[in-house]
Image 1 (tube, rainbow, N blue to C red):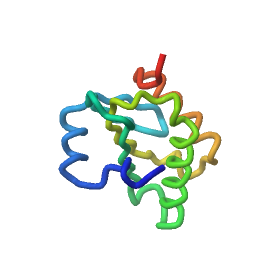
Image 2: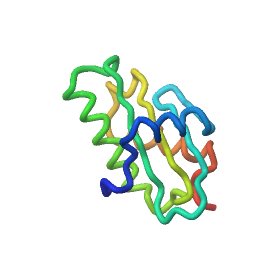
Image 3: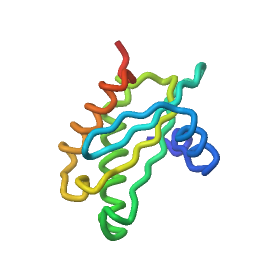
Image 4: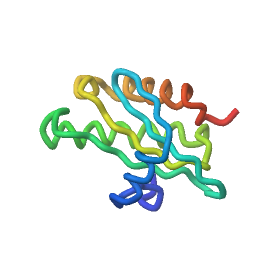
Length: 113
């Protein structure tokens, strides 16, 4: 995923968290905000210290980014997303995280029809 498609600024995170809608399962929380006219969706990732040490947190972020790359063509480009990892993700592999992410995206109707 290109760095231009990542959300980095705290103001953008707060705007999505405060004004957007959310959906969650046991592993992930998804906040999303509809923004018309974007050519590509943008994503911010949050993996807290409860997940584990820096190595484990970076691994979870890598898995999430890679899952988003694989699901990229199915995701509606008119959304800004913030994905927050919960504690169970620390013991999950890539395919489990991808399955959980696709579940959250389907339930929140972000996948293209």
